[in-house]
Image (tube, rainbow over all chains, first blue to last red):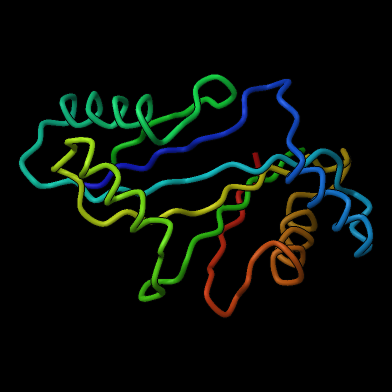
Amino acid sequence: MRARVHVSLKPGVLDPQGKAVSDALGRLGFSEVGEVRVGKTIELELEDGLAADAAEARVKEMCEKLLANTVIERYAVELV
Amino acid sequence: MRARVHVSLKPGVLDPQGKAVSDALGRLGFSEVGEVRVGKTIELELEDGLAADAAEARVKEMCEKLLANTVIERYAVELV
């Protein structure tokens, strides 16, 4: 079983990396681009035999403890 | 209109960041975790009035020129 975790900055949190990408795209001639925000996707291989709801709960625990900084980031867990 | 770009390492390319996450999860007691791979998600705000196929072509051009290193990374574009 695999899990995919999407980690992104909460709305309102400044994203300097996104700003740099947006500026660079503008300089390259992509003038149609406005705000850009950059997030992370973490794909985890989980051992087989885990129930889906147990796996989801464990991955959420991983997010709270390590994968996301919940002060400024939000996360979404998807089992695939 | 918004576009979401998923950038991930090609299969077979070593992912030291993913390895570090996997090791750290193991040390925290999440022994059910195997391989971990870390990718990026880039959300772009595009000006309104662009046709979907034109927007997708432009975003792919952005990926080739700036957003992805196509030697070691692959990307997927999604309009949202």
